[in-house]
Structures are given as C-alpha cells and as structure tokens.
Image (cartoon, rainbow, N blue to C red):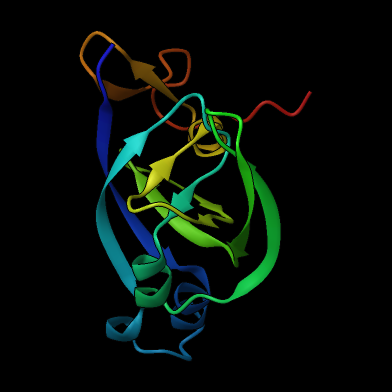
Length: 137
C-alpha cells in the first residue's frame, strides 16, 4: 500500500460561523486548501504551525501525542476547524505538529469515508454513498 493523499479545505470554524450570522464578510473567512496525508494508524487530525497561524486559531488545550516509534510529547490542541474532504464536511480539534496536514481516523469516521488502498484514494462508504452515516451505538 502506498500513501493516500487528498485535497482538503480547512476553514477557521469561528470565522465560518460569524460569516453565516452576517457578522463577518465571506471574503474574510480564513481557509486553506492542503494536500493532506491520510493515515489510518493515526487517530487525530494534525496541522503544521504555519497553518495554525494562517487560520488564526487559538490553542485550547494540550495533549500527549504518542508517535509510531514509541516516543511522546505534549502538543497544542486548537479550537475546532471545519474540514471539507471528498465533498463531505465535519469539524475537528487538530493537534499542532509536524510539517503537513494529516487526516486520521476521527475525520474518516465522521465523514464516513473509506481508504481504497488499491487505487490510493478515499471513497464514500458504499453502504452510504449519498451522505455520511455516523454510528451512535
């Protein structure tokens, strides 16, 4: 299996809400289109520091991040961002680390997207091709 990369649009959720309420012009909503790595072994979404700054986010907490090599460190957690991926959207509280956007399991579950390893892409869950279905039980 090779890398799976997808285009994602990341948007400052506060800006998006303020714009929807008419309190911020739409052209002032901060967003960024990134080439993101999909990692089914990762739970969380991560964004690099430059993107944290670009989107004008705030740190709302800290979490211990554990890496594949067994090492760990405390990293910043931001306020929610909106994530649009393969025509589906969700929000998530990303960790600030690394040098690229990483999409983990939480976003895949919330968008009901599956990894097609053979073709190195994301696909809509065939059981729910028209819209995401979230498992609640």
